[in-house]
Length: 112
Length: 115
Image (cartoon, rainbow over all chains, first blue to last red; front, side, top):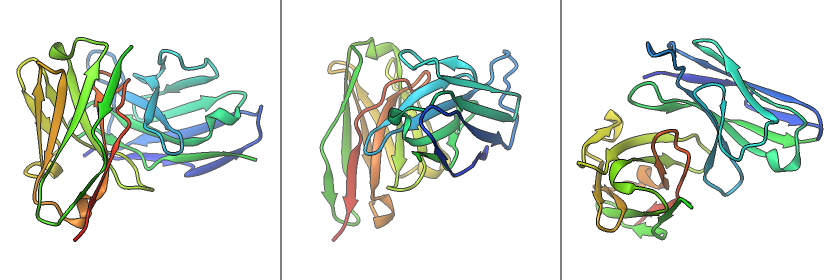
C-alpha cells in the first residue's frame, strides 16, 4: 500500500498568517497520463471531510483561493494564505492513484 | 444540488451484521461510482471500497474483503454497505462519498458494536 506521511501533525496559526502542510507519498503519484493523483481534504470538527484540492493543484468548487496545492511526484504541499477561523480542523492528504486509496494521519490546524 | 443522506446510528451486538444506506439525489447515480470509508474517532480515514452503479462492479480494499459488501439500488439511487461478523474493532463512523474526486460526502453514520 502507498503510505502517505504528513507533517506537521499539528500547527497553530495566527489569523491572517499563512500555513503550510506537507505530505509525502511512498511511491510516485504521477500517472502516465500526466495527472498526479494527490488530494487534500479538510474535516471540520464533527463534520464529514470536504474536498479542497484535487489532482495536486486544482481548487475544488466553492473553495476559497486562499488554498493552493503544489508538489512533485512524491512531495506535496497545501498552503493556506490568510488563515481564517473557518479553516480550523484536520487536513488530510490522500492518494487516489491505486487500490487501496490511502490517506495521511492528518494535520490539525488551530488558531493562536 | 448533490446530496448524500446516510441512515441513522446503529448499535449492534458482536457477531451480528448491519446494512448501511446512502441515498443520493441531485446527480445521475446510475453512471457514477460510490465509495465507502471507515473512520475510528480520533483517527484517519480508511477507504473500504467502491461500486459502479451502472453494473454493480466493485473494488475493495483487501483489508475489508469479507467484511464489507457493497451494493446499489438504481431505482432509488441508493448505495448500501453490508458489514458482517461485527466485532468491537468495527465500531466507527462510516461515510459514503461520490467517487471521482470524493467531492460529495454523506454525513456519516456511527456504528457501535457492543454486547
